[in-house]
Image 1: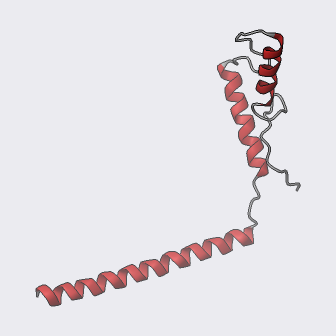
Image 2 (image 1 turned 120 degrees about the vertical axis):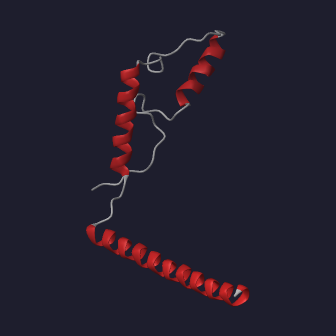
Image 3 (image 1 turned 180 degrees about the vertical axis):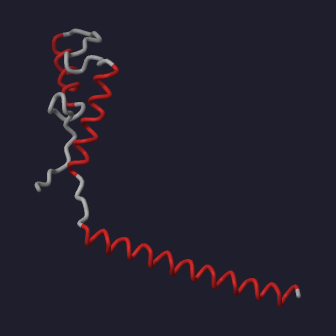
Length: 107
């Protein structure tokens, strides 16, 4: 299994987010044009295209996740359950102590 490093590249362009918009702004300023011209890749997409892109990005991010092995998962679960039992015992002890104390004070 290979690990990949994080990237801010968008799947459509392969460029970091904002890099092509900065280049467009520089080229527009250089040529003296002022307009709301959108490039073909940055043009507004339809609903289904945006939903498809969203799910492709989800799958790409899930492939980057390092999943625990069965042994690690068992160990983590045991640690969490043990911690919860200890905290429950501590809170039950405090509850019992405070109830006895309130019976002594208020009779």
